[in-house]
Amino acid sequence: MQTDLAGSNLTKANLKKADLTKANINTANLENANLQGANLTKANLDSANLENANLQEANLTKASLDSADIENANLQEADLKLTDISDSDLSEANLTNAYLVGAELVNANLRKVCLEGASLEAANLYNADLIGANLNGANLRKADLTDANIYGATFDNADLTDAIMPDGEIYNLETSTNKQLKRRKSMERQIIQTESAPAPVGPYNQAIAATGKMLFVSGQIAIDTRLNEIVYTDDVAKQTEQVMTNLEAVLTAAGAQWSNVVKTTVFLKDMNDFATVNGVYGKYFDPDTAPARACVEVSRLPKDVLVEIDCIAVI
Image (cartoon, rainbow, N blue to C red; front, side):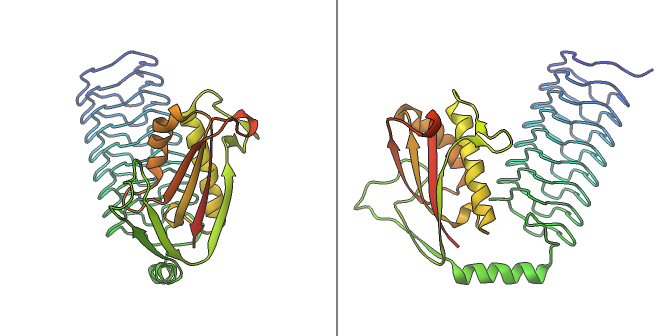
């Protein structure tokens, strides 16, 4: 008989080595639950809350975790072969040595996730957010990374043979190396620091010296292009995320990345929002190489948004 735990509150439950094969656990709350070694083969965990759950060595083969919250979960050595994890939040989860062959990770939030040594062969990572992810030593042979955001991600000793890269091209070691060399030659960047001027109070540097082709990106506001309207009218943090998404789209269209940005200007409706905006903004830049920046409060912004940001990049 199929176990039905849909919508159940299983917070901190001890389900270690439990047999939940084909179980219906969708929308259940499994926050901080212990599912170490559990058998969840073909289980339905759609929209389940697995935040901080322990799924170490769990068997999730062909399970469905669509839109699940798996933030900060421990999935070390878990078996996720052919699992559907699309649209799920796996940010900062531990997937060290996890088995994700053929897994569906479309639109998944994989920010700062640890996938060191993981097997992602033929996995679908279309439009996945891999900002700051650790993919060192991972097997990404034939994986699809089309439109994935890999800013700040590390791929040391990763196998990307025949993988489809974010630009839609098949990975080729020689081509990739040549592109990196060409980029280094065309864009040189120097961080300027001096004790004779005030130190930065956020994720930016005093000045950047750069050579190359300059790209001037117009100010972006929180318009969702899918809806063609302003979103999150009362949430400055989410508006900032949308602004950064729009800036990134323009940068990508020009063949640039966040690492090419040398100067930004942040316009705020209320300077009291500075810390909140700073927290979101800082996720997109390495503090050591972050661009120069100015931040000003203005009386009004287009369409009465809360924040607008423009940038200058050097390619």
